[in-house]
Image: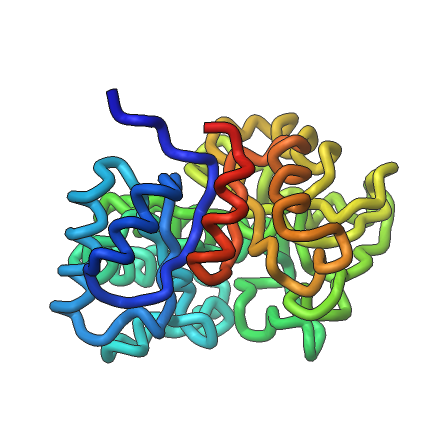
Length: 289
């Protein structure tokens, strides 16, 4: 009987099938693999790589961060899609964008798109969210994200809402440091509102790295049991994924192995991190088989 996958989402060093990559994937047994622009050299190469990984580990999910605009990994092989802020908060345009992206991703052998962004605008400069939000109105965000999800699903691509419980209002980039998200339940209600609509239908939700006044526990939300409990209370029945546990926002929360264990213990279904294969294997060895 084949061993079950570990609850981790990893990336890979190379961009083509090889004996070393096979050894890594078989030993790590990840639930999913995340590719980046550096892994995409041509359409044919991407299809071959994804098909090979699927044949090696049946059931593995291969993902891409493909939002459009500034976060558009498919640009590496010639695709050009607009970002959320360019769509005028129009659900019809968001659905068409989802359909077009879904068709492209499915044709390349991907399974999951780590999109759309459900954070509320306007994005403060330097937060990394510029151009990535649909609107500053929670109803418009919910409608556009829902339409985008629907568009992706037409091609069989699973979506991932991000970044729960909302990075709107942050004043720094969580890639570099931990945002302090101010405001009590009343002030943050509008940021959580899109998830009240969308969580029951989303296959995946990505947890933000943020310190929130709404929680008694001031740990980063990706490591915070209160954040996962709140998501459950909204009717979410999919799988929760951490944002990258190698980001600067959580760099002071122990070593990578400790962060991964904390996230899984807090309630994450899947721990995600972006690191070299050797480092990932060392962490995977600490996770129960």
